[in-house]
Image (cartoon, rainbow, N blue to C red; front, side, top):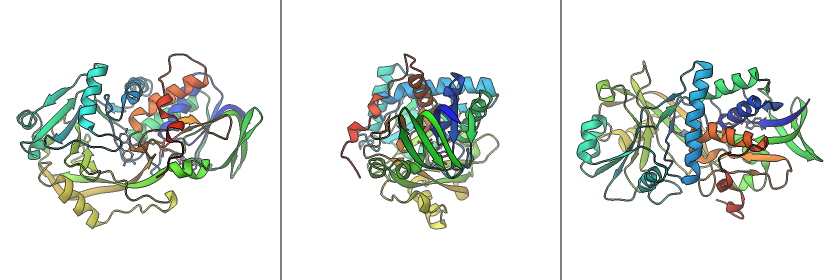
Length: 391
Ligand SMILES: Cc1cc2nc3c(=O)[nH]c(=O)nc-3n(C[C@H](O)[C@H](O)[C@H](O)COP(=O)(O)OP(=O)(O)OC[C@H]3O[C@@H](n4cnc5c(N)ncnc54)[C@H](O)[C@@H]3O)c2cc1C
């Protein structure tokens, strides 16, 4: 079969790109080593935070806004609930800078971007935080808050599933359980080799997540690090503290990468909250990730991040999961042409903050491929900025 475009990897980025290409009438095929949505990559665990004023930088804001618009369109088309705009509270400590990877003042940058883009938000002092959000009263007198009502959470597995289903209805050929083993540029096109044979296309888009480095070789294998992350669902002792309308939250309680966490309100019908940390010290082989979480890790999570900060939450973990961030040296995205494979565009695994931008990235790539004007500008995510870099 010969296609206009082959998309390799049907996770967050790939599903969005397939849907957007298919709805533009492009002859497109999607390939994945598993059957997405699955729990082997970077897009599982029930929920992902979406924020409009993405403190990682101005280039991300249009992608976040476009994604929220697209999820609403997808909800109307599919009848599935994908995006819950429950608001987001970012809490930091007024006595110290609110660091996050790749930024020097995360809360300050977030508020500045909200002002620059006219995004609705409010800044809260400790008294106001206690009054509006009693579950965070333990944060203390030094707490300062940034609240964004248009933020919330997305359902990653559902969003992937809906976009793949719609893509198939629109004529895309999907090949789950088909691992790509090599990509070759030939003359005017590309040949994609799998364990079951090969396919050709005019162009290919590689959104292979944590396995992108292995598949794409230099410089991606040098630039991308795969970091194990842990997710915990703790049962609530006082569910009334997390009343309907409770926001997603980011708690920045120290300056080290390990001194922050983020989480979600209980999902409808559940009596537990999901909470997670980020770590960048421990990176490894994507095929050798330890996918179990020990009782010691559960206890450490509770003591370090929950106890005394989040009120009404028990130390009883009802569920745990391991997921992976695939990070670049500056924690930004790579969305660019492959330097040696003509006709191949790479969308990196997006460094732990990609889901909120995925629908917008799929749209921008499809518009680019179709030569449409007005696509979101992704030039900030060039490979050249990382030239010669490594971890
Ligand atoms: C714990 C955790 C929490 C996160 N929280 C947030 C959040 O709150 N907000 C946010 O915006 N982002 C968040 N992120 C980041 C976001 O989820 C990721 O950036 C995004 O899901 C990555 O999407 P992807 O398409 O790059 O990778 P994936 O969704 O993993 O997709 C890659 C796909 O490629 C396939 N593949 C790989 N190799 C091959 C091959 N050789 N042949 C065929 N197929 C292949 C894989 O099977 C997989 O399906 C979080 C990530 C994690 C891990």
